[in-house]
Length: 220
Ligand code: 4GX
Image (cartoon, rainbow, N blue to C red; front, side, top):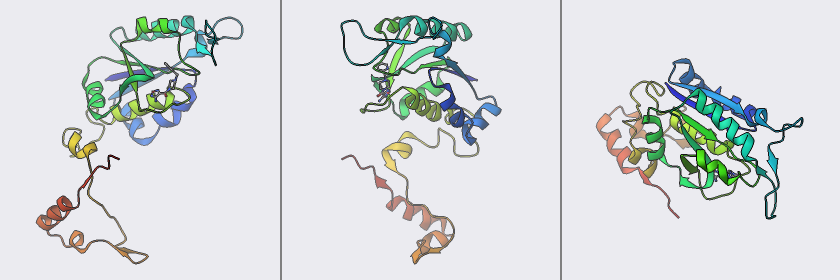
């Protein structure tokens, strides 16, 4: 079973995602176990403070080292061999091979979600890798963490089910090329018809049509 812990100030926003059908099923069959750790629980003082202004000045707030360190230590106590991944625009850009690698690794994951302007740099002493989901600026690492959770979970054994295994759906088919156009009922909608070859039952012809209609991914 893949254990995924998430350290976040917004644990509640993960609930509808991890309880959505595919991810819920993945937990039910024991393919994955999600654990949400609320960074606020490790806050300092009566206000449970987690952020403060940067030394040297500058805009905004940073997550303080003490709550971050305590939260990471607890996650590591739960799962001593887990890999700590910081969601950061400075990280390696997430893609399907990284998702496959994370799904295959035996060790658990601790996804650390920063907010505000970032985290006290000293937390890097506990971080094994940084991952970005793309070159744009978000308000926090939560959506990146959800992206990783979703992409990794569907690759775990037994989650997709049936023939459509993560192996069969290769990287080339999955992301480098667009899928061929697909249609379901009705045969005609507002004058738009399903290509007749797809209704023909000629499997050879259908395969040929699909191959001819595979599109290269737009890269501009
Ligand atoms: N892919 N952000 C994290 C705060 C922050 C900054 C530095 C840690 C280190 C992002 C992305 C992203 C904005 C999430 C800054 N935390 N994360 N946040 N794109 O833009 O992953």
